[in-house]
Every structure is written in C-alpha cells, then in structure tokens.
Length: 93
Figure 1: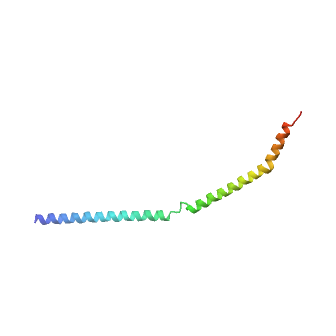
Figure 2: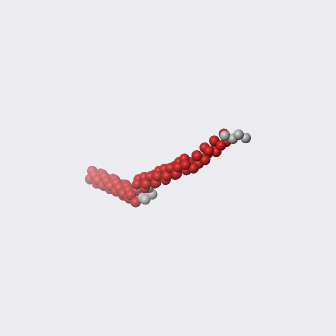
Figure 3: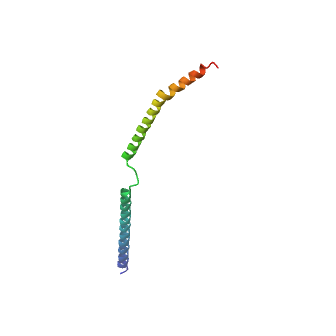
C-alpha cells in the first residue's frame, strides 16, 4: 500500500512540475511576443531614406553657398581688394 502512495505522490509531483514548466514557457513566450509587438509598433526611429535625403539636401545647399561665395569673392571683392592694395603701394605721399 505504501508503494502505491509513493507512486501517486511521485506522479502528482511530476505532473505539477510539468504544469509549472509549461506555464513558465507560455509566460515567457507571451512576454517575447509583447516585446516584439512593441518594437514593431515603435515609430521613434528614422528611416534610412529620410536621413539620406537630409544629407543630400545639406550637401547641395552647402555647395550652392560655397559657389556663391566663390563667385562673389572672385568677381566683386577680390578685384576691389587687389586694386586698393596696389593703390596703397603706389602712394607717393
């Protein structure tokens, strides 16, 4: 009789252990699904295309500004500066 009680106790214990293990696996799986859903639904980050377009716009605007300054210095400011410097050295005070 004692052996049957021990077997019943063992089976009950094993069944409880299996149930707890399965419950833990299910709980961890649900947590993982919740995390994946949160990451997939997150709209915080930028897309690579947006960043690329921003960089391209910055480069184009920078090139336009640099070209404009070069044209301004080359045609307007530098000849005037050159003329004034030459006049200063030709001064016969």
